[in-house]
Every structure is written in structure tokens, then in C-alpha cells.
Amino acid sequence: MSTVKTVKFTLNGQTVSAPEGQILVDAVADNGVYIPTLCHTRGQHCLGTCRVCSTQVNGKVSASCTLPVAEGMAVETETADVKNMQKTVVELLFAEGNHNCPSCEKSGRCDLQAVGYEVGMFVSRFNYCYTPHENETSAKQLWLERDRCIFCQRCVQFVHSANGKKIFSINGRGHNARIEMDIALADTLTDAQAKEVADLCPVGAILQKNQAYRQPIGERKFDVASVRERVLKGETV
Ligand code: SF4
Image: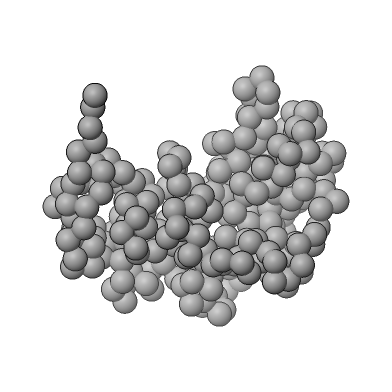
């Protein structure tokens, strides 16, 4: 029987332990410290696209959603530099997209909005780009609102049809890159699968049609428990 080795590392000056190879953001949460993230799903391989979880490891900036813990690491999550870096990335995401929280049906269930509160963002320090984005509305059950896409790529990585084909893909490069939805494949999803896909998207970019504003204010995901509380409980956010 193989046993997982435990490694020791310092977290904000305290010595803590975690299973060797555990991804840092999860290892830190298991030791009671919250690091904000938007592209990471607990226990799943992460592409490290959003960079919101940037922390200081051995004095260097690292994305904690892609870094496995190792013996002797020195991790700092609470310094002013780290906090400002995380807040800056969130502000940039808000400035790049067209996020109108009060009118978005994902409000109260949106990871970006919830993380915005956690990092103490009230308004972006960057000029808003107001880039127009074409939306994709022709699928039967799903709506792709590209204005709100933060390009985390979770949909590309994890959403497949019954025959294993990717339903979402990336088209274009650089600033012109955008998410595409294969309409014929999207239309093969069941109601429950369409809901899972919409829930997987950390913002209101993928929405389930005819389901808007179903949960009253006070009962929405992050009304009930904050993103910090959920992460520290080990939940998949
Ligand atoms: S549509 Fe949603 S899940 Fe897909 S890349 Fe954009 S934000 Fe991420």
C-alpha cells in the first residue's frame, strides 16, 4: 500500500504541512488561509489562466493554482504586495470585460463578483475598455455572453459532449481570441448538463436560458456562504 508523503512548508511565517504534490491553493486552504482564484476548480488540473491567485513563494511571484507544495517552501499570502497584486488582477478583469453586476443574472452566484468583494475592490483603477463583443444566442438551452467572459477556459477544458467532443473552443489569438460554442453539440446536452455547464462558468458568460433570477436575493450561492467560507470548507467553488 502506498502512503502519500507529507511535506512541511511555511505559510505566512507558520510551519504547516500538506500531502506532497498537493496544489498550493488547496494546501493553503486546508491550513485555514484563503487565496482568491477564478480559474481553479479544487482537485482538478488547472491551466493557471486568471493569475488572481498570485502569491509569493520563496520570494518570487507564483500562481498558486498550478504549483505543487514542496518541502521547505516559504509562502506569503498576506503581504501588502501580494494583496495589491491580486486586487490589481481582479480590477483588470473588470476593466477588460463589460461587467454590470446589478443587471447580471449571475449576480450573487458569480465568482468574479464574490472575489471582487474579497480583495476589497470597489472600482477598477484602470480605464474600462468597453470592447464590444458579439454574443451567441442560437443554442436551445445555453446563452454565451462574451461581454462577461474572463477567458478562464474552464468550459474549453471540462465540457464535452456524450461522444467526447469539446463543446467550447478558442477562436482567434491575442486580443481577438474568443470562446466559441458548438451549437449542434450544445443542443445535445440535457437540462441537468446545461445547468452544470452554466454553473462551471465563474461569471455570467454562460447562462442557462429561461432560468434567470430564479433564486431570490438572500438565497443565492454567495448570499448563503461567502467564497472564502466555501473555499476554506474545501468546497468546489
Ligand atoms: S465562457 Fe465562462 S467558463 Fe468559458 S472561458 Fe469564458 S468565463 Fe471561462
